[in-house]
Amino acid sequence: MIGRDYPQLGEVSQKALEGTHACISAGRDPDSPSFAFKGDKVCPNEDGLVILKENHLWLLAVADGHLGHQSSHALLDGLASLTALPPRLGRLSLLLSSSDWIQATPGGSTLLIAIVDEKSGQVSGLSFGDSSLVVVGPQGAQVRNQINNVYLRGGNPVEVELGRPFDFRLNPGERLLLYTDGVNECCYRDPHRSVSLRHLEQLQQQHPEKTDVFVRALMDLALVGVGSNPGGQDNIVIVAFPFGT
Image 1 (spheres, one colour):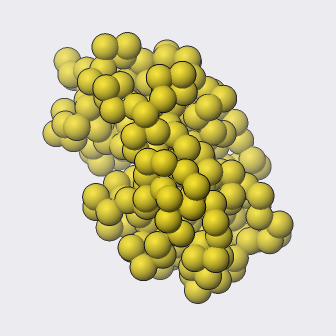
Image 2 (spheres, one colour; image 1 turned 180 degrees about the vertical axis):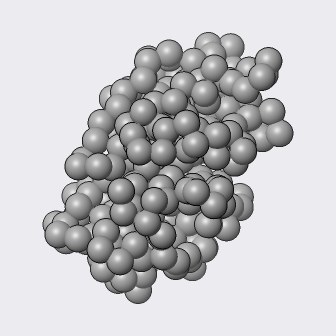
Image 3 (tube, helix red, strand yellow; image 1 turned 180 degrees about the horizontal axis):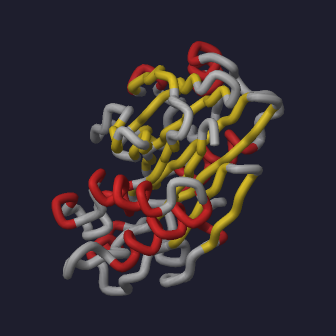
């Protein structure tokens, strides 16, 4: 689900692959300050996501373009074209470093890729920039990647050494979430007035079994905003993978 296909403010699209659910929206607020930084007014949705499954392995990825959609969309198009999933972090790193996906694109992008084994719950991958990887379950919500401001740059090979690796195991009943900063900065560049881990925990308690309902509820919250604060001020993608349910 690539932002170029979902440009309309206020609209939400949701899809699923088996039990994994995803949502995308360009946002809701036409007066948002974020639109001053969009590189292409014709394509205002710079976010996107990819979900792939091969046997017991999943590849989940989200990306958020900076100063244009070209790099983020090219990264996701490249991942979507894979004919086999990398089973380990080393193979993923080699795949990215040998690609030419963004060597001719302007701007930059976050990129968050998780390889998930649905049998064991093992999760590994790489994180570039400020998209979030969160585990939410009966024990609460926890960010599991290192969020920073180090983005991939178009016009260059994929600089794998800039990525922050992660490797952990899910417990039964937990959900793995990937989302762009349109969630935790739905009030633009103000995380303290946006969706927090506490809100994720509340939604998990309300919808412990129905991942499709959980994903849509999270999207709606990010679009409307929390409390009396603005929401929907940036593009949003959300992916949710339930383990052991």
